[in-house]
Image (cartoon, rainbow, N blue to C red; front, side, top):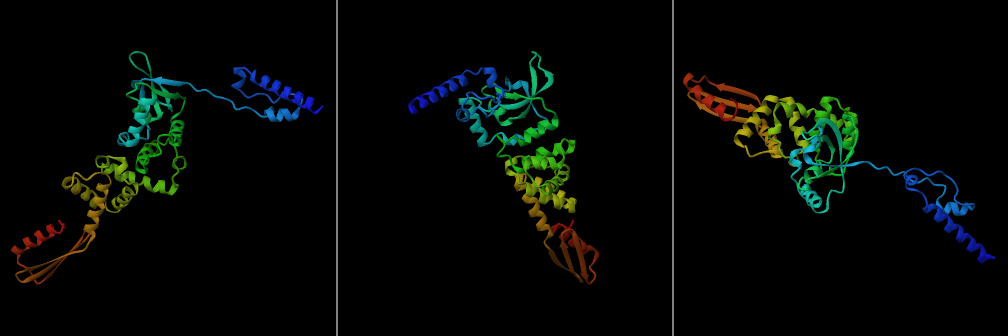
Length: 321
């Protein structure tokens, strides 16, 4: 009797499995109803009859030629981030093995002369550039507003794990300026402290007014904290900082990126050091003191008028004129 019972149970299991395998393709793409496959609850439990199956969602993947794709106006990758070792690795991989991970695009109202549609690249800038030799770029097509596109772009991590804080900072400036997202929304999406984000945005005035894009060229070689430090100095004394920029760009034109910012700090620190010069003229002892932009001149005795040229020359030497 035991053997017969086991045989009967095995037959039921086989029948249940056969019934399960007969599900159509249409049924497999949606959730299945919770109905028992047999009269034995134990078999139903073993077969997972009371569990809902995951719904499979298929999104269209476009194969686009590169002239069909334009950059999202709020894209977050700087040109200098394209030519990196990681980019070269991705390029070699796509060239030899193909593009495994599609980007994300949205359709524009534009068309090319031959009638092909133009799409805006939301996610996948590195993959897009790396696939140029292949000639085709794969991407999911989505309908997104500007705000939705920005949220998708900022939260996507596949090819932006090496994005630097300075590069990220550059990318959020137009978002703030155009009011696409609030500061709090941006901070949450990029994982920054809200206070630190607000403090960093104060550096925008310094960056714009001093045309720092001419000197900060490689995002991988610029430290955001260094930029914020110099921006705070600019807020206190814009004339001294601008003077330092003019001097460094003229005399040390090879200094770029973080070296340029460090040179500004170094120059200003040097200017803040007290400097004292003593001049002995006929009938007078002159003491000149300079601390930052403050200069004092004391005379011990009255000098002759024609001796004042030496005082002027000394003021020029210590950077007081």
